[in-house]
Length: 179
Image (tube, helix red, strand yellow):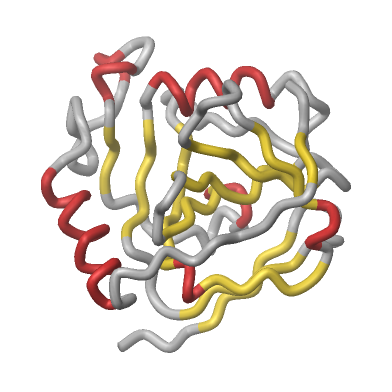
């Protein structure tokens, strides 16, 4: 078992979190929801772009029970694409750093890859939903790149959920960001 603890902060250092152990998976998502959200959020003054040079959003997925929000949580704000959206993106409002994406009822958090220094970012393992990429031909084939989410991707999520005893902890966020 990987017992490594990684400390991460927002760009200005006000918000702190830590993750323990190995991530579930490291992915780059090209779905319309991630692309639309990135486009809207990138209209804010952000420390860096959310999307990669290939148009996807880089995530490092962790079980919720392996993520601890340590300081600056009063600065966390959620953003949803619409009032009935089943996903929410959470930013640190102190500097508009994207922190994580959360699926309603999910047992994991998709932490934004830009929380890591480039040389410390866990290795990309797959690209998903490439059918939605604006220029699918420009998406590299250096890792598995499925047009849709793959069985292996869902298998890793299921394995993590089983290990958590089928729990899906809530993470309370007090405010919202309009973008």
